[in-house]
Image (cartoon, rainbow, N blue to C red):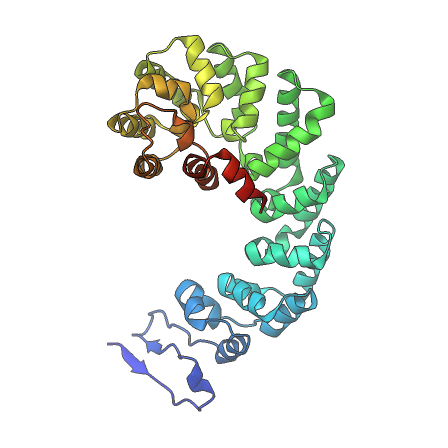
Length: 370
C-alpha cells in the first residue's frame, strides 16, 4: 500500500512546490525527493520550475549539480538573466555538466565562433549541442580540425556543430568518408574544382544531416537517376536542389514516385525529367503524399496542364494550397484560368505575390523599400 509522506516547509521553501516522496513496498523502486537546493537555485535565476518539472523533472533529483557555475559561465560570456533562464528551462541538463567540462567546451567553441555573443546566441538556440558529454570532446576537436582543413569558414563550422551535433560527436573518419564521397561525386558530374568549396558549404548549410547518411547511398541513387536519362549536368543541378535529400532516398522509392507521377501527368520521359528538375519533390515525397496533393489541386479546378507548367506547386501541402487559393479567390483571382505561380514559395513569397495583385507591382516595390 502506498503511503504519502509530506514535510513542513519554511516560508522560503514554500515558494517552490515539493514533489512528494512515495514509499512503496519492499523491493519496489523508491522515488527520490527533489533536491531542494537545486530548486531554490533555479528559482533565484527566474527559471520556470513548472516547465522543468514537466519536461525534465528527473534533473531536479540529481546530485551533484552546478547551477551557479553554469549561470556564471553564461553570464561571463554576456548572457542576460532572461537568456540564462531560457537556456536552463529548455535544457536543464546543463546544470549536470562539470565546470571543467564546460570551460573546455567554451574554449573549443570559441575556436569557431568570432565572439562570445555569437556563442551565447548558439547556446540559446541549441543548448544540447554545447552542454554535451565530455566523452565527445576529442571527437569534436578532431572534427573541427578536419573541417578547417577544407577551408570552410568558421561560421559554417559553428552552424554545423550547432544544428547537427551528432556529426561532431562521432569519429572524424566517418565525416571524412562522406565529404570525400560528396567531393568525388561533384567532380564526376562535371563540377569545377574552383567552385567545389562554395558548393560544399551551401550543401552542408542547407542540410547538415547529410553527413550522417551512408556514403554508398549517394552513388547508388545517382546511378539510378542516370539510368532514367538524367545527364551529369542535370544530376549536378538536381543534387544542389535536393539539398542532400538524395542521400536519404533509394532507387525503389524513386522508381515508384516517378512512375506514379508520369502516369498521373501523362507526360513523356523527357518531360518528366524537366519537371523533376523544377520540382525535386517528385523524387522524395511518397506516392500517397503526391496523390493527396494532385487530388487537392484537381478538386480546386486546376488542370494537369497548369501543374505541368508550374510543378513546384506540388512542394506545398494540400492545406497550404487550399488556403492560398481561397485567399486569392477573395480578391477575385481565379487560379483555374490564371497562373499557379502566385501559389508558390514561402509564406513571405506568397504575401508579396498577393500584395502585387492587390496593390500593383509599383506600389509593392515602394512598400518593400520602406
